[in-house]
Length: 256
Image (cartoon, rainbow, N blue to C red; front, side, top):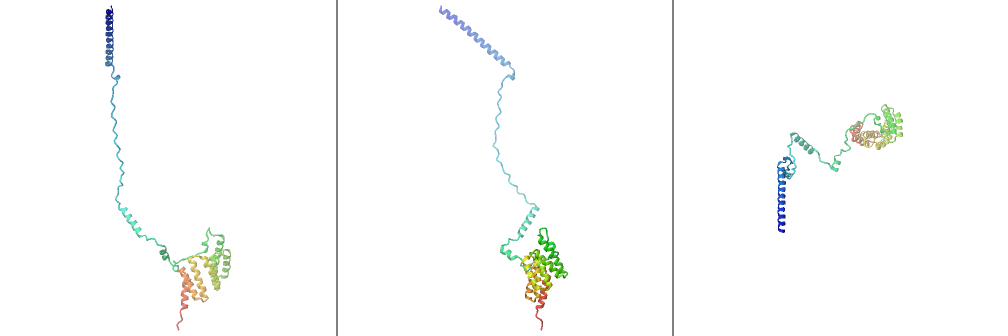
């Protein structure tokens, strides 16, 4: 009885196994047919990626060497001129050499200062100096016309207004000389000399007038020295050159 039941179960199990195998096989067949009939674009393809490009190392940067250009004919000529200019420049003088090359005061260039004293009045001139120069110009014109007393009246006012006006003292000395007041003239010239500074024309005129005063007083050696000093300041001073000529003629011993 038990054997019969075991046989029945065995047959039943084998039947079930067979059915299961058939079911599984049917599923596989259906799946295979569906995959074979599926459109091509639904099928997932494996596209291989392209290989990554190989990065070459960057070449080293080369600095471009400057190309030496040949100088043109014009450039060569300019260089030659520059070399000539440099070679012609004299070497710098030392302090001692400069001192030795300074022109001595006894031989200055010929200077001239003619014209009215009114030209010395500028916007920077003080009112006192301007008024004094106007009166000095009036006195100078009076001396030229021979009105020496009137000239003294004008010129004395010039130094009252501006006591530092050298032109007023100089023309006062000239007016006194014309009136034969030689010592008074010399006194005013001493004051004018201290105020003129380094003006060659006026110092030449001053020493020439001083020589005239000494000559009139009979002081011939002092007159000679003053005339010579006047020509050192201004070689073109006519009064000094004529005075020296006249003085040297007077100093010559008379023939026996």
